[in-house]
Image (cartoon, rainbow, N blue to C red):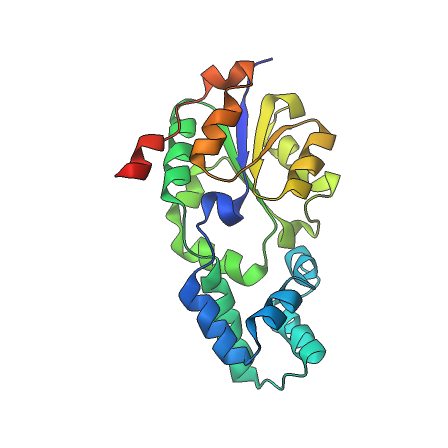
Length: 216
């Protein structure tokens, strides 16, 4: 069967790496050693992405566990920097997504996402409008790698699982997509993706990745 859609994760696929200046500011605002910060940062992240917690409640949970005493203004500043931590973009993948769209294939975004980052993206990223569908975990109250979030996206795009390619930086999310029947790959960079795609017979239906742009 031909490929009809490409579905992208946002974090570390369409986005770039975590912004170092925002990370430094978060460490300054929280006063936590980096190893302690990193340990607690992910503890409640899926609850945040699911919409069970919003930004302030997420950081208050971390404050409770680490003994931080944070004022409302401090919490607000931390939430702002947490948004900026993930707001940089991956221009090569955005370029390729645009080429995929121009080729006639459908495109979607399927991302675990907290409401504050999503609000920032909607306000600042006009390119979101070029995608046929967005699935944001905080609005669906379901997170990857749960099956429902993939089937919801497929239904919205109007494609069968075997007609879609899903790209994500986390193996557990890729495995969740494969269990539903999608073609799914762990994204580590455009060069590695180009090599991975060569193993699929439908790869010729996709535009070439902008690998040459890496050396510019």
